[in-house]
Image 1: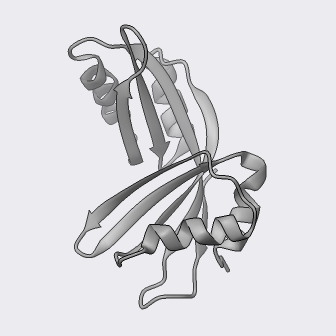
Image 2 (image 1 turned 135 degrees about the vertical axis):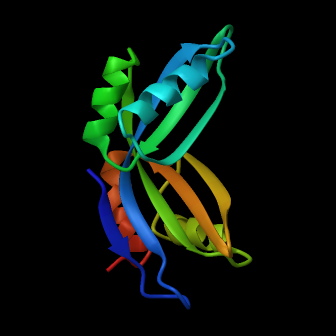
Length: 148
């Protein structure tokens, strides 16, 4: 389930989404990532975010934040992926110095411990950030970030 929430501050409102985050471990060999992403593409899966990295001997970890979780889970099952599901917050807004620092400061001020963060320049003056946290903290985090 993806929940859209908007922030009031800034020149252009930032978008906040409480999103489902999925992880899968795969064998680390040439073409395996292409196989997985190709299967998701063939099933019409649109990803908000994706990254992969080496994880242990002969393994790679894939991280997915799909636009539509039901479509993604069905496609992942067909691609024989074993998924682990977590919760994250996705934020997209106007790029500016300190954008991610501001998000983390607001969460710290609300005593919310972040498990991990991924940030990226979205191009054309925008940025995106994924904040990983326990599912129980997602609503509190959205509130701490000024979501309306």
